[in-house]
Image (cartoon, rainbow, N blue to C red):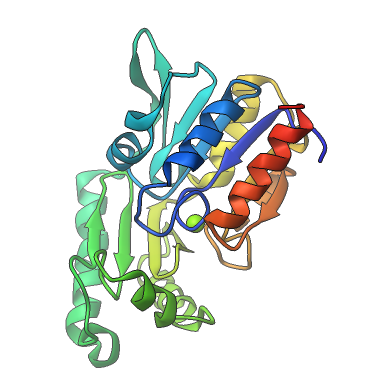
Length: 250
Ligand SMILES: [Mg+2]
């Protein structure tokens, strides 16, 4: 494998199973990699979850580590002994209320989706982003996996939402989730921001994600020119990181 000058990883279904913490071996791989080149996590998850599931398990803090939570609507860096927010393009309270009203109205009026069995919350307000999941945030992995195998349910939901709140960015992510953020503040924005910050062209950076397919929440990064690698899940990501480490003779 060629040596990229920076590496970016999606979290859900890339570094870890959906809404789960990565295995300690995966975190260890990330720490080792970040000592060799700038390393970033770009995820639909909020910063609190990244901190709890990943950063708190770091054996040492690497200065080269960037977190882009809530689909890159925010960026965090470790500076002066703490994780600091570098930029924040969160939704305003009025925007969040408008989005949530549309989602709740849909759940109340759709007999097929609205009345489907579900586990836990279906509308998750993370301030910078609203996540929407028909099966619920606490659904078992098997339920999430089998709910929308060909992606057609999520595509139909995205089309429906675009007709109502098309002024926002609406993308599918994970196995059963739709992420809603400000238009144009997405993972492609995060890639371009990091490219400028590091003064490294996107073409010399490397992105690993599970949703690089049409309509997936990783697909937007392709337009930046960044090299990409589609993975099926954490076990394949582990192999990719091992290949990267090997490229640096580690
Ligand atoms: Mg993912």
